Length: 178
Length: 213
Image (cartoon, rainbow over all chains, first blue to last red; front, side, top):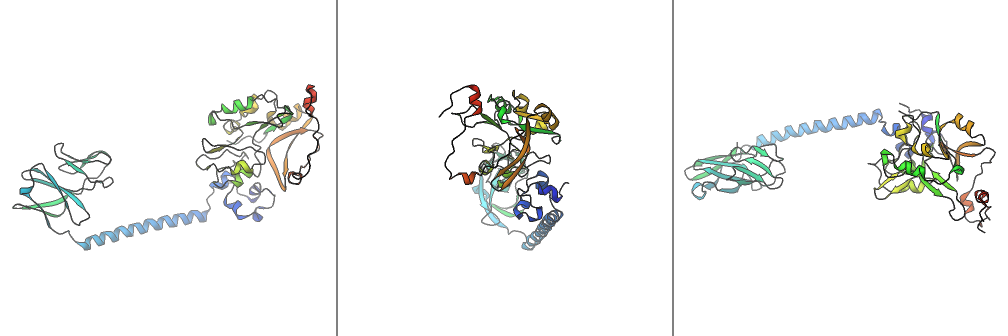
């Protein structure tokens, strides 16, 4: 690479040596070669910062896992009664917190499924289309299988988060994540 | 591949006949089709038929590149100052105002400055620039220094210009009469001075046309 000071002096209008030129001239070189030149110090600083960011990210994931384990399983909560939920109908409920909206669908007399309603693409609420056996996301026409929650069409690539259910007599309980 | 060092660009404004062939040829180039990067300037349209083809002189210290706040104008190792990098140019017009030769022109429709790059796609593979290949009077000449000295014994190339306190040397040469003295015109000092009476245009007297009083 051609970086000798004589070569650099070519781009000084007053002909003074490169060391006497103002700093901005070195920061904004005119020649392609100098413009694309990355000093060893800059490159090392970049590598150290990026590696550090990766390391911090890994530590953050470990910490998150620890916090999640400490929190324990979500509580068991009654969400519906079978008598009020006809076959082929659905209802929404909040589980495990008030901020997370879920949807419960009764597919058959003994078949119930519940999923987190947030689409796995960009978290729009999905709508159950029982007749078409799918959940539809209206935002980007994503589609999920009604029984398994697996993505079948559109942008989503991950299945909907499944909620585990338990039925005792007439009552339907949410008992945690599947 | 760089532009070969023995090949140089020579501009002889006194030879220009104003045919616009260079402008047409330039606008046909593949890299900037439909947009000419060369301009044909009229010196004093009412009094003189003199025209000047304006190609980039590719300064050793390109003022356009130095004033560019977006770092869009760069020079290759062979000394050719390239046109503005498209992703970088912010159409601020700094280069247009700064260039002492009036070369860069702003394409406001495209928000992009486009200037002569000596047909880098051609000269870097050993071809002549478009304008020099079509110029019928060879006011724009591209070739070796020996060639120009052999074919134009009454002229000599010059590539040093003085603008105020700034001395500019350029890659492109301008042909001047061999015996002519190079004069430095102090434009700033001349701004307040009364206008001198202009000498009759030698080209017009040659054509035997009545010169405007």
